[in-house]
Image 1 (spheres, rainbow, N blue to C red):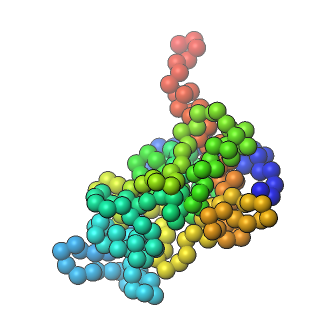
Image 2 (image 1 turned 30 degrees about the vertical axis):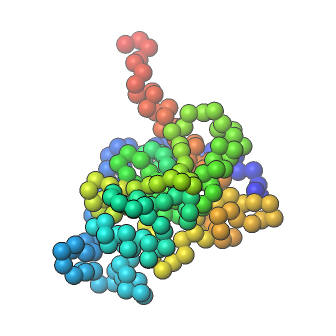
Image 3 (image 1 turned 180 degrees about the vertical axis):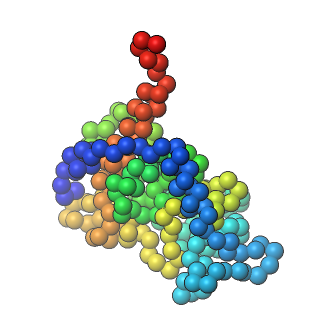
Length: 236
């Protein structure tokens, strides 16, 4: 790791977004995702919404087409059966946190990998192997032992696959991957000795430590706000 990010990662002050803002963001991203395929008929893709290979740029709404989109368009393995799930620890790991804290993180760290929203939870894709580093990195950032509601999925894990418009009440992409583009080199990753980036990330990939520091700060802030709302006034 090239520098100590503790002050830059935890010293900023931002208010957690309100529930209304969270709803507006979720609704906005859901309504922007077009219907890409009728499962009972031929493909129907909006003009300008395909890649050079002819695949839709955004994930389809039905699971059969979405599985093909993930496996062949992105090269991401999926679990067999329904509901459609992506395997973690192979091409990426997942950092999961409350959606309110996650929205604040996205304002502080604009450069991330793909990001999904699932109800009240947000999932950020990070370099494969990052989940194993999470406990040690949190201790190094002086967040060890602090309840944060921040977790990670790595090798052997599964995460629900986002579909268009959150079909079936499932997750939806806020920052989607694009088929035909290499996703892994751009995922947030830790810097190893010698300057090499973990998980096959490129030299310009976002810094996992900075992202994790911001996530821990916002998770802690969100938890304090929730606890403050539950506590009665001392003189009531």
